[in-house]
Image: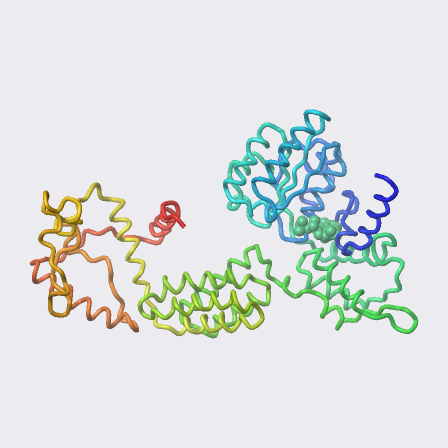
Length: 472
Ligand code: ADP
Protein backbone atom coordinates (compact mmCIF):
# COMPACT_ATOMS: atom_id res chain seq x y z
CA UNK A 1 0.00 0.00 0.00
CA UNK A 2 1.48 3.38 -0.99
CA UNK A 3 0.83 6.75 0.60
CA UNK A 4 -1.99 7.51 -1.83
CA UNK A 5 -3.75 4.20 -1.02
CA UNK A 6 -3.34 4.95 2.62
CA UNK A 7 -4.95 8.39 2.23
CA UNK A 8 -7.85 6.95 0.21
CA UNK A 9 -8.46 4.27 2.81
CA UNK A 10 -8.41 6.77 5.63
CA UNK A 11 -10.87 9.00 3.79
CA UNK A 12 -13.29 6.14 3.05
CA UNK A 13 -13.09 4.98 6.66
CA UNK A 14 -14.01 8.47 7.84
CA UNK A 15 -16.97 8.52 5.46
CA UNK A 16 -18.20 5.08 6.51
CA UNK A 17 -21.32 4.85 8.69
CA UNK A 18 -20.76 4.99 12.45
CA UNK A 19 -21.62 1.29 12.87
CA UNK A 20 -18.96 0.31 10.35
CA UNK A 21 -16.33 2.61 11.91
CA UNK A 22 -17.02 1.14 15.33
CA UNK A 23 -16.91 -2.47 14.25
CA UNK A 24 -14.86 -4.24 16.94
CA UNK A 25 -11.37 -5.18 15.73
CA UNK A 26 -10.67 -7.71 18.44
CA UNK A 27 -12.52 -9.75 21.04
CA UNK A 28 -11.71 -7.08 23.66
CA UNK A 29 -14.03 -4.67 21.91
CA UNK A 30 -16.75 -7.25 21.31
CA UNK A 31 -19.61 -7.07 23.81
CA UNK A 32 -21.99 -9.81 24.96
CA UNK A 33 -22.26 -13.29 23.41
CA UNK A 34 -20.46 -14.76 26.42
CA UNK A 35 -21.97 -18.19 25.78
CA UNK A 36 -19.84 -18.54 22.67
CA UNK A 37 -16.83 -16.29 23.21
CA UNK A 38 -16.66 -15.97 27.00
CA UNK A 39 -13.29 -16.78 28.66
CA UNK A 40 -12.20 -20.34 27.99
CA UNK A 41 -14.93 -21.00 25.43
CA UNK A 42 -14.09 -23.09 22.40
CA UNK A 43 -14.48 -20.33 19.84
CA UNK A 44 -12.39 -17.87 21.88
CA UNK A 45 -9.62 -20.44 22.26
CA UNK A 46 -9.74 -21.20 18.56
CA UNK A 47 -9.51 -17.51 17.67
CA UNK A 48 -6.71 -16.85 20.15
CA UNK A 49 -4.64 -19.72 18.82
CA UNK A 50 -5.44 -19.04 15.15
CA UNK A 51 -6.68 -22.58 14.75
CA UNK A 52 -10.20 -22.63 13.43
CA UNK A 53 -10.72 -26.37 13.82
CA UNK A 54 -13.56 -26.66 11.32
CA UNK A 55 -16.01 -24.68 9.28
CA UNK A 56 -18.52 -22.77 11.36
CA UNK A 57 -21.98 -21.31 11.01
CA UNK A 58 -22.87 -18.20 13.00
CA UNK A 59 -26.60 -18.10 13.58
CA UNK A 60 -28.41 -15.16 15.13
CA UNK A 61 -30.58 -12.07 14.65
CA UNK A 62 -29.33 -9.09 12.63
CA UNK A 63 -26.83 -6.70 14.19
CA UNK A 64 -25.59 -9.07 16.88
CA UNK A 65 -22.04 -9.45 15.63
CA UNK A 66 -21.93 -12.30 13.10
CA UNK A 67 -20.00 -10.39 10.44
CA UNK A 68 -17.91 -8.74 13.12
CA UNK A 69 -16.96 -12.06 14.67
CA UNK A 70 -15.96 -13.41 11.27
CA UNK A 71 -13.71 -10.39 10.74
CA UNK A 72 -12.16 -10.78 14.19
CA UNK A 73 -11.38 -14.39 13.33
CA UNK A 74 -9.78 -13.12 10.12
CA UNK A 75 -7.78 -10.40 11.91
CA UNK A 76 -6.25 -12.93 14.23
CA UNK A 77 -5.45 -15.38 11.48
CA UNK A 78 -2.78 -15.72 8.83
CA UNK A 79 -5.40 -16.98 6.41
CA UNK A 80 -6.72 -14.86 3.56
CA UNK A 81 -10.21 -13.53 4.33
CA UNK A 82 -12.70 -13.66 1.48
CA UNK A 83 -16.12 -12.16 2.07
CA UNK A 84 -19.19 -12.73 -0.02
CA UNK A 85 -22.94 -12.50 0.36
CA UNK A 86 -25.31 -15.20 -0.81
CA UNK A 87 -27.74 -12.48 -1.85
CA UNK A 88 -25.31 -10.90 -4.28
CA UNK A 89 -23.26 -13.82 -5.53
CA UNK A 90 -24.03 -17.01 -7.39
CA UNK A 91 -22.31 -20.13 -8.66
CA UNK A 92 -20.01 -18.27 -11.09
CA UNK A 93 -18.68 -16.02 -8.32
CA UNK A 94 -18.11 -19.05 -6.14
CA UNK A 95 -16.16 -20.76 -8.91
CA UNK A 96 -13.88 -17.71 -9.17
CA UNK A 97 -13.42 -17.57 -5.38
CA UNK A 98 -12.48 -21.25 -5.28
CA UNK A 99 -10.04 -20.85 -8.15
CA UNK A 100 -8.29 -18.02 -6.37
CA UNK A 101 -8.23 -19.99 -3.10
CA UNK A 102 -6.60 -22.92 -4.92
CA UNK A 103 -3.94 -20.65 -6.41
CA UNK A 104 -3.30 -18.99 -3.05
CA UNK A 105 -2.79 -22.37 -1.48
CA UNK A 106 -0.57 -23.63 -4.31
CA UNK A 107 1.65 -20.59 -4.88
CA UNK A 108 1.69 -18.88 -1.48
CA UNK A 109 0.82 -21.74 0.92
CA UNK A 110 -1.88 -19.49 2.31
CA UNK A 111 -5.26 -20.88 3.36
CA UNK A 112 -8.57 -19.09 2.77
CA UNK A 113 -11.38 -18.26 5.16
CA UNK A 114 -14.56 -17.89 3.13
CA UNK A 115 -17.27 -15.84 4.83
CA UNK A 116 -20.71 -16.22 3.26
CA UNK A 117 -23.26 -13.81 4.66
CA UNK A 118 -26.95 -14.84 4.58
CA UNK A 119 -25.88 -18.31 3.45
CA UNK A 120 -29.48 -19.59 3.65
CA UNK A 121 -30.24 -17.44 0.59
CA UNK A 122 -28.25 -19.79 -1.64
CA UNK A 123 -30.40 -22.56 -3.05
CA UNK A 124 -29.50 -26.20 -2.56
CA UNK A 125 -27.49 -26.43 -5.79
CA UNK A 126 -25.44 -23.38 -4.84
CA UNK A 127 -24.78 -24.72 -1.34
CA UNK A 128 -23.91 -28.10 -2.81
CA UNK A 129 -21.35 -26.47 -5.11
CA UNK A 130 -19.45 -25.30 -2.04
CA UNK A 131 -19.36 -28.68 -0.31
CA UNK A 132 -16.42 -30.44 -2.04
CA UNK A 133 -14.20 -27.42 -1.43
CA UNK A 134 -15.05 -27.33 2.26
CA UNK A 135 -14.51 -31.07 2.35
CA UNK A 136 -11.03 -30.98 0.76
CA UNK A 137 -9.95 -27.95 2.82
CA UNK A 138 -9.63 -25.51 -0.10
CA UNK A 139 -11.58 -23.09 2.06
CA UNK A 140 -12.60 -22.93 5.70
CA UNK A 141 -16.21 -21.90 5.57
CA UNK A 142 -17.76 -19.30 7.90
CA UNK A 143 -21.47 -18.97 7.21
CA UNK A 144 -23.73 -16.35 8.73
CA UNK A 145 -27.48 -16.76 8.84
CA UNK A 146 -30.47 -15.25 10.56
CA UNK A 147 -32.48 -18.43 9.90
CA UNK A 148 -32.31 -21.68 11.81
CA UNK A 149 -29.53 -23.50 9.92
CA UNK A 150 -30.96 -26.91 10.81
CA UNK A 151 -33.90 -26.06 8.57
CA UNK A 152 -32.58 -23.53 6.11
CA UNK A 153 -29.04 -24.67 5.36
CA UNK A 154 -28.13 -27.79 3.43
CA UNK A 155 -27.77 -30.61 5.95
CA UNK A 156 -24.47 -31.78 4.43
CA UNK A 157 -23.00 -28.31 5.04
CA UNK A 158 -24.46 -28.18 8.56
CA UNK A 159 -23.01 -31.55 9.45
CA UNK A 160 -19.54 -30.38 8.38
CA UNK A 161 -19.77 -27.17 10.38
CA UNK A 162 -19.90 -26.26 14.02
CA UNK A 163 -22.87 -24.05 14.80
CA UNK A 164 -22.60 -21.07 17.14
CA UNK A 165 -25.74 -19.26 18.17
CA UNK A 166 -25.62 -15.52 18.81
CA UNK A 167 -28.32 -13.87 20.93
CA UNK A 168 -29.93 -10.44 20.70
CA UNK A 169 -27.63 -8.10 22.62
CA UNK A 170 -28.62 -7.26 26.20
CA UNK A 171 -29.37 -3.67 27.17
CA UNK A 172 -26.14 -3.19 29.18
CA UNK A 173 -24.15 -4.31 26.12
CA UNK A 174 -25.95 -1.84 23.89
CA UNK A 175 -25.33 0.86 26.48
CA UNK A 176 -21.60 0.12 26.40
CA UNK A 177 -21.60 0.20 22.59
CA UNK A 178 -23.36 3.60 22.49
CA UNK A 179 -21.06 4.92 25.21
CA UNK A 180 -18.07 3.91 23.14
CA UNK A 181 -19.61 5.63 20.11
CA UNK A 182 -19.97 8.86 22.07
CA UNK A 183 -16.50 8.80 23.59
CA UNK A 184 -14.14 7.23 21.04
CA UNK A 185 -12.17 10.09 19.54
CA UNK A 186 -10.96 8.29 16.42
CA UNK A 187 -13.91 6.22 15.36
CA UNK A 188 -16.83 7.81 17.22
CA UNK A 189 -17.98 11.23 18.36
CA UNK A 190 -15.37 11.74 21.13
CA UNK A 191 -14.17 14.99 19.59
CA UNK A 192 -17.65 16.42 19.05
CA UNK A 193 -19.58 18.35 21.68
CA UNK A 194 -22.63 16.16 22.15
CA UNK A 195 -25.03 16.12 25.07
CA UNK A 196 -27.57 13.30 25.09
CA UNK A 197 -30.33 13.09 27.71
CA UNK A 198 -30.28 9.95 29.84
CA UNK A 199 -33.87 9.17 28.82
CA UNK A 200 -33.02 9.60 25.12
CA UNK A 201 -30.13 7.16 25.44
CA UNK A 202 -32.35 4.62 27.24
CA UNK A 203 -34.93 4.98 24.50
CA UNK A 204 -32.37 4.10 21.82
CA UNK A 205 -31.25 1.09 23.83
CA UNK A 206 -34.80 -0.12 24.53
CA UNK A 207 -36.12 0.22 21.02
CA UNK A 208 -33.05 -1.15 19.24
CA UNK A 209 -34.36 -4.67 19.90
CA UNK A 210 -30.95 -6.12 20.75
CA UNK A 211 -29.55 -4.99 17.38
CA UNK A 212 -26.33 -2.96 17.74
CA UNK A 213 -26.43 -1.75 14.15
CA UNK A 214 -29.92 -0.39 14.74
CA UNK A 215 -28.82 1.45 17.90
CA UNK A 216 -25.72 2.94 16.25
CA UNK A 217 -27.60 3.98 13.10
CA UNK A 218 -30.18 5.74 15.25
CA UNK A 219 -27.51 7.56 17.25
CA UNK A 220 -25.80 8.61 14.04
CA UNK A 221 -29.05 9.90 12.58
CA UNK A 222 -29.80 11.80 15.79
CA UNK A 223 -26.36 13.44 15.78
CA UNK A 224 -26.16 14.21 12.08
CA UNK A 225 -29.70 15.60 11.83
CA UNK A 226 -29.47 17.92 14.85
CA UNK A 227 -28.02 21.38 14.22
CA UNK A 228 -25.65 22.55 16.98
CA UNK A 229 -27.01 25.07 19.49
CA UNK A 230 -25.35 28.49 19.89
CA UNK A 231 -22.46 27.27 21.97
CA UNK A 232 -21.79 24.57 19.35
CA UNK A 233 -23.29 21.77 21.42
CA UNK A 234 -25.49 19.11 19.79
CA UNK A 235 -28.32 18.38 22.22
CA UNK A 236 -30.24 15.15 21.78
CA UNK A 237 -33.50 14.85 23.67
CA UNK A 238 -36.10 12.10 23.80
CA UNK A 239 -38.07 13.47 20.87
CA UNK A 240 -35.04 13.40 18.58
CA UNK A 241 -34.18 9.89 19.76
CA UNK A 242 -37.72 8.72 19.06
CA UNK A 243 -37.60 10.07 15.54
CA UNK A 244 -34.24 8.55 14.85
CA UNK A 245 -34.67 4.95 15.85
CA UNK A 246 -36.23 2.57 13.43
CA UNK A 247 -39.14 1.23 15.38
CA UNK A 248 -39.29 -1.95 13.37
CA UNK A 249 -37.09 -3.75 15.80
CA UNK A 250 -39.77 -3.58 18.46
CA UNK A 251 -40.59 -7.10 19.57
CA UNK A 252 -40.44 -8.34 16.05
CA UNK A 253 -37.43 -9.82 14.46
CA UNK A 254 -38.28 -10.29 10.85
CA UNK A 255 -36.50 -13.56 10.44
CA UNK A 256 -37.27 -15.17 13.75
CA UNK A 257 -40.27 -16.67 15.52
CA UNK A 258 -42.26 -13.43 15.60
CA UNK A 259 -42.20 -13.34 11.81
CA UNK A 260 -43.77 -16.78 11.57
CA UNK A 261 -46.12 -16.35 14.54
CA UNK A 262 -47.48 -13.04 13.30
CA UNK A 263 -48.12 -14.17 9.73
CA UNK A 264 -49.76 -17.27 11.22
CA UNK A 265 -52.06 -15.13 13.39
CA UNK A 266 -52.87 -12.99 10.35
CA UNK A 267 -53.77 -15.91 8.10
CA UNK A 268 -55.79 -17.59 10.87
CA UNK A 269 -57.74 -14.34 11.39
CA UNK A 270 -58.59 -14.09 7.69
CA UNK A 271 -59.51 -17.77 7.55
CA UNK A 272 -61.61 -17.31 10.70
CA UNK A 273 -63.48 -14.37 9.09
CA UNK A 274 -62.35 -11.76 11.63
CA UNK A 275 -61.50 -8.64 9.59
CA UNK A 276 -60.58 -6.61 12.69
CA UNK A 277 -57.98 -9.07 13.89
CA UNK A 278 -56.73 -9.43 10.32
CA UNK A 279 -56.19 -5.65 10.07
CA UNK A 280 -54.44 -5.61 13.44
CA UNK A 281 -51.93 -8.32 12.48
CA UNK A 282 -51.47 -6.79 9.05
CA UNK A 283 -50.60 -3.42 10.60
CA UNK A 284 -48.19 -5.09 12.99
CA UNK A 285 -46.37 -6.80 10.14
CA UNK A 286 -46.13 -3.67 8.00
CA UNK A 287 -45.00 -1.61 11.00
CA UNK A 288 -42.28 -4.14 11.67
CA UNK A 289 -41.02 -4.02 8.10
CA UNK A 290 -42.39 -7.35 6.88
CA UNK A 291 -42.16 -7.82 3.11
CA UNK A 292 -45.53 -6.89 1.50
CA UNK A 293 -44.88 -9.46 -1.23
CA UNK A 294 -44.58 -12.19 1.39
CA UNK A 295 -47.98 -11.15 2.84
CA UNK A 296 -49.54 -11.07 -0.64
CA UNK A 297 -48.20 -14.52 -1.49
CA UNK A 298 -49.82 -15.88 1.67
CA UNK A 299 -53.15 -14.24 0.73
CA UNK A 300 -52.97 -15.82 -2.73
CA UNK A 301 -52.57 -19.25 -1.13
CA UNK A 302 -55.39 -18.60 1.31
CA UNK A 303 -57.74 -17.54 -1.49
CA UNK A 304 -57.50 -21.01 -3.03
CA UNK A 305 -57.18 -22.99 0.16
CA UNK A 306 -59.82 -21.41 2.39
CA UNK A 307 -62.27 -19.59 0.14
CA UNK A 308 -62.16 -21.32 -3.20
CA UNK A 309 -65.42 -21.60 -5.07
CA UNK A 310 -67.44 -20.15 -2.20
CA UNK A 311 -66.20 -16.85 -3.60
CA UNK A 312 -64.13 -17.33 -6.76
CA UNK A 313 -63.59 -13.54 -6.82
CA UNK A 314 -61.30 -14.06 -3.81
CA UNK A 315 -58.45 -15.39 -5.92
CA UNK A 316 -58.99 -12.61 -8.47
CA UNK A 317 -58.93 -9.91 -5.80
CA UNK A 318 -55.79 -11.36 -4.19
CA UNK A 319 -54.12 -11.66 -7.58
CA UNK A 320 -55.10 -8.15 -8.57
CA UNK A 321 -53.74 -6.87 -5.25
CA UNK A 322 -50.43 -8.63 -5.84
CA UNK A 323 -50.19 -7.20 -9.35
CA UNK A 324 -51.21 -3.68 -8.48
CA UNK A 325 -48.72 -3.67 -5.64
CA UNK A 326 -46.01 -4.28 -8.23
CA UNK A 327 -47.09 -1.12 -10.10
CA UNK A 328 -47.83 1.11 -7.14
CA UNK A 329 -45.40 0.10 -4.38
CA UNK A 330 -45.59 1.59 -0.92
CA UNK A 331 -47.15 3.60 0.64
CA UNK A 332 -50.29 3.61 -1.59
CA UNK A 333 -49.85 -0.07 -2.43
CA UNK A 334 -51.15 -0.77 1.06
CA UNK A 335 -54.70 -0.09 -0.22
CA UNK A 336 -54.60 -3.19 -2.44
CA UNK A 337 -53.27 -5.32 0.42
CA UNK A 338 -55.98 -4.02 2.75
CA UNK A 339 -58.69 -4.52 0.15
CA UNK A 340 -57.61 -8.11 -0.43
CA UNK A 341 -57.39 -8.73 3.32
CA UNK A 342 -60.88 -7.38 4.00
CA UNK A 343 -62.39 -9.09 0.97
CA UNK A 344 -60.98 -12.47 1.93
CA UNK A 345 -61.75 -12.07 5.64
CA UNK A 346 -65.40 -11.28 4.93
CA UNK A 347 -65.91 -13.72 2.02
CA UNK A 348 -67.80 -17.00 2.45
CA UNK A 349 -65.37 -19.84 3.13
CA UNK A 350 -64.83 -23.27 1.67
CA UNK A 351 -61.91 -25.68 1.85
CA UNK A 352 -63.31 -27.99 -0.79
CA UNK A 353 -60.19 -27.60 -2.97
CA UNK A 354 -58.49 -30.04 -0.60
CA UNK A 355 -60.40 -32.75 -2.52
CA UNK A 356 -57.35 -32.79 -4.76
CA UNK A 357 -55.22 -34.39 -2.05
CA UNK A 358 -57.62 -37.33 -1.81
CA UNK A 359 -57.33 -37.81 -5.56
CA UNK A 360 -53.53 -37.66 -5.28
CA UNK A 361 -53.51 -40.21 -2.45
CA UNK A 362 -55.76 -42.47 -4.54
CA UNK A 363 -53.29 -42.32 -7.44
CA UNK A 364 -50.44 -43.15 -5.04
CA UNK A 365 -52.13 -46.29 -3.77
CA UNK A 366 -53.34 -47.79 -7.02
CA UNK A 367 -51.31 -49.58 -9.67
CA UNK A 368 -51.78 -49.29 -13.40
CA UNK A 369 -55.34 -48.25 -14.26
CA UNK A 370 -56.71 -48.22 -17.80
CA UNK A 371 -58.53 -45.20 -19.14
CA UNK A 372 -62.05 -46.42 -20.03
CA UNK A 373 -62.19 -47.14 -23.79
CA UNK A 374 -64.88 -44.60 -24.59
CA UNK A 375 -62.72 -41.79 -23.07
CA UNK A 376 -59.57 -42.69 -24.99
CA UNK A 377 -58.21 -40.57 -27.79
CA UNK A 378 -59.92 -41.84 -30.97
CA UNK A 379 -57.56 -40.04 -33.32
CA UNK A 380 -54.63 -42.44 -32.85
CA UNK A 381 -55.92 -46.03 -32.94
CA UNK A 382 -59.64 -45.48 -32.71
CA UNK A 383 -60.31 -47.43 -35.89
CA UNK A 384 -58.44 -50.57 -34.91
CA UNK A 385 -59.30 -50.74 -31.24
CA UNK A 386 -62.55 -48.83 -31.04
CA UNK A 387 -61.14 -46.17 -28.74
CA UNK A 388 -63.55 -43.33 -28.08
CA UNK A 389 -66.25 -45.14 -29.99
CA UNK A 390 -69.03 -45.25 -27.40
CA UNK A 391 -68.33 -41.72 -26.19
CA UNK A 392 -71.42 -39.52 -25.92
CA UNK A 393 -71.11 -35.80 -26.71
CA UNK A 394 -72.82 -34.00 -23.78
CA UNK A 395 -73.85 -30.94 -25.80
CA UNK A 396 -76.20 -33.11 -27.87
CA UNK A 397 -78.31 -33.62 -24.76
CA UNK A 398 -80.76 -31.45 -22.85
CA UNK A 399 -78.94 -29.26 -20.27
CA UNK A 400 -75.68 -30.15 -22.05
CA UNK A 401 -75.34 -33.12 -19.78
CA UNK A 402 -75.60 -36.85 -20.04
CA UNK A 403 -75.09 -39.56 -17.43
CA UNK A 404 -71.86 -41.02 -18.71
CA UNK A 405 -68.96 -42.73 -16.90
CA UNK A 406 -65.78 -40.67 -16.54
CA UNK A 407 -63.94 -42.39 -13.66
CA UNK A 408 -62.13 -45.72 -14.09
CA UNK A 409 -64.41 -48.72 -13.45
CA UNK A 410 -63.08 -49.42 -9.95
CA UNK A 411 -63.87 -45.94 -8.72
CA UNK A 412 -67.37 -45.47 -10.09
CA UNK A 413 -69.66 -44.46 -7.23
CA UNK A 414 -66.96 -42.56 -5.34
CA UNK A 415 -66.90 -38.79 -5.13
CA UNK A 416 -63.79 -36.72 -4.38
CA UNK A 417 -65.35 -33.28 -4.42
CA UNK A 418 -67.70 -32.27 -1.62
CA UNK A 419 -68.97 -28.79 -2.41
CA UNK A 420 -69.84 -26.61 0.55
CA UNK A 421 -73.15 -24.77 0.80
CA UNK A 422 -71.37 -21.44 1.13
CA UNK A 423 -71.75 -18.49 -1.20
CA UNK A 424 -71.30 -19.20 -4.87
CA UNK A 425 -70.51 -22.86 -4.19
CA UNK A 426 -74.06 -23.47 -3.00
CA UNK A 427 -75.34 -23.07 -6.58
CA UNK A 428 -72.52 -25.33 -7.78
CA UNK A 429 -73.60 -27.90 -5.23
CA UNK A 430 -77.25 -27.90 -6.41
CA UNK A 431 -76.24 -28.26 -10.02
CA UNK A 432 -73.64 -30.93 -9.34
CA UNK A 433 -76.00 -33.01 -7.22
CA UNK A 434 -78.57 -32.94 -10.03
CA UNK A 435 -75.94 -34.14 -12.48
CA UNK A 436 -74.69 -36.82 -10.14
CA UNK A 437 -78.22 -38.15 -9.65
CA UNK A 438 -78.73 -38.26 -13.41
CA UNK A 439 -75.47 -40.12 -13.83
CA UNK A 440 -76.31 -42.55 -11.03
CA UNK A 441 -79.64 -43.41 -12.59
CA UNK A 442 -78.28 -43.84 -16.15
CA UNK A 443 -75.34 -45.97 -15.05
CA UNK A 444 -77.18 -47.72 -12.27
CA UNK A 445 -74.51 -46.72 -9.78
CA UNK A 446 -74.51 -47.58 -6.12
CA UNK A 447 -72.48 -45.16 -4.04
CA UNK A 448 -69.37 -46.56 -2.45
CA UNK A 449 -66.60 -45.19 -0.30
CA UNK A 450 -63.22 -46.68 -1.08
CA UNK A 451 -61.21 -43.45 -1.21
CA UNK A 452 -58.30 -42.82 1.18
CA UNK A 453 -59.08 -40.75 4.25
CA UNK A 454 -56.48 -38.09 4.94
CA UNK A 455 -55.34 -36.35 8.09
CA UNK A 456 -53.28 -33.14 8.25
CA UNK A 457 -49.93 -34.88 8.26
CA UNK A 458 -50.90 -36.90 5.17
CA UNK A 459 -51.85 -33.68 3.41
CA UNK A 460 -48.48 -32.08 4.35
CA UNK A 461 -46.68 -35.14 3.04
CA UNK A 462 -48.55 -34.93 -0.26
CA UNK A 463 -47.79 -31.20 -0.53
CA UNK A 464 -44.10 -31.97 -0.22
CA UNK A 465 -44.41 -34.60 -2.90
CA UNK A 466 -46.28 -32.20 -5.17
CA UNK A 467 -43.46 -29.68 -4.68
CA UNK A 468 -41.00 -32.29 -5.93
CA UNK A 469 -43.12 -33.57 -8.84
CA UNK A 470 -44.63 -30.30 -10.02
CA UNK A 471 -42.49 -28.23 -12.32
CA UNK A 472 -42.71 -24.50 -11.68
P1 ADP B 1 -24.59 -9.07 11.84
O1 ADP B 1 -24.88 -9.99 12.98
O2 ADP B 1 -25.85 -8.59 11.15
O3 ADP B 1 -23.55 -9.63 10.90
P2 ADP B 1 -22.59 -7.08 12.38
O4 ADP B 1 -21.53 -7.95 12.95
O5 ADP B 1 -22.39 -6.61 10.97
O6 ADP B 1 -23.99 -7.76 12.52
O7 ADP B 1 -22.77 -5.83 13.34
C1 ADP B 1 -23.17 -4.54 12.87
C2 ADP B 1 -22.51 -3.46 13.68
O8 ADP B 1 -23.01 -3.52 15.01
C3 ADP B 1 -21.00 -3.64 13.79
O9 ADP B 1 -20.36 -2.87 12.79
C4 ADP B 1 -20.68 -3.14 15.17
O10 ADP B 1 -20.48 -1.74 15.13
C5 ADP B 1 -21.95 -3.41 15.95
N1 ADP B 1 -21.91 -4.65 16.73
C6 ADP B 1 -22.59 -5.79 16.46
N2 ADP B 1 -22.39 -6.73 17.40
C7 ADP B 1 -21.55 -6.18 18.30
C8 ADP B 1 -20.97 -6.66 19.51
N3 ADP B 1 -21.25 -7.89 19.97
N4 ADP B 1 -20.13 -5.82 20.19
C9 ADP B 1 -19.86 -4.59 19.72
N5 ADP B 1 -20.40 -4.07 18.58
C10 ADP B 1 -21.23 -4.85 17.87
